[in-house]
Image 1 (tube, one colour):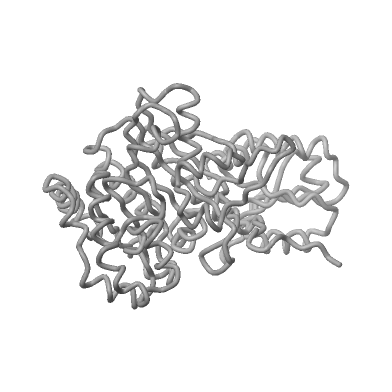
Image 2 (image 1 turned 180 degrees about the vertical axis):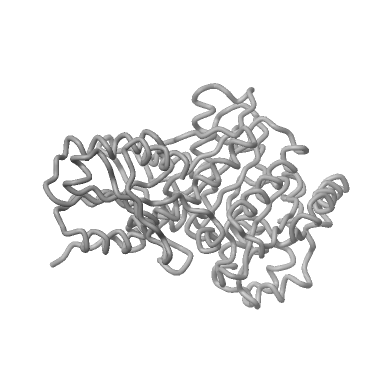
Length: 414
């Protein structure tokens, strides 16, 4: 019997990763322009970290944690999201009183039914602004989201935003929502019935049409938050309405318990039912929940697999690719030196060596198959005379005989 990969744990091949690397390089430039620095935290964390951060009543903890006991009988798990680990790292280093602009990337793990848009191992790129009060940081992160989408060619997206107020507003609204829904509990979907007792605000985000119809007659969250919070939300909309399609969505609560204040989500109709590819918000209370000092915080995470479906590579200029063909009696010491010198001269060009003794015809076929723009051909005569043949593989491309110095000059200026 053949060994196969676990369900929902995909393999990524070179043809997949070329697109990933291009995407990641685009984002790295955006992060650098905002002076945001990378942090790396472990894949494995204490299970307690996520019980205390995302909430014991959340779907992640109840159904989706990859949690198990290690040899010391300690409960550990594969991380289901990135924020809690970053905050744990800052607390552990006693840096809660400092400001940080951080980004991270890597795999996350949730034990859920594999389907389009949802995998058990998936990848996120996240940004966390720590130590910054509500205000300018919200504007900068929304600006960063717009820059990211522009840099990878996403034009048709909607940015949904909401304000969750403070803890008192959330508590008052939750009580009003429970009082309204309890007489209609039999009309709620089974999942929403469970949320009514554990996390009532998550019902606002229900995908069940019957629940949404019922909520139309219920209390409105915007009536429970302060006038200043409502004004801040509206000012945010006004600031960016000329740059993207940005809308207030009072049903937006996000799936994790630690959010408070502004929350936001980027969605695209091109992704189908699972239309969100980026989401985040403010979480000023998380550091204290995890045993640290009070620390203002806001951030977002990008679902890499989802956003890659929207990544437009058509207008992105790829670096030239040059095939390096050696025929006849090979003298590896000499030909390898030529290839090495060319790579040193211009490392932005892809130099594809075929590492075979095939005929010129077969190697040219490989060069075309590998989408080479040009080839360098070195036969016995060329090697003896310290020359190479430069061939343009475009339809009307020419061919010329060049000295080693001439090919180096051409390679530098290609």
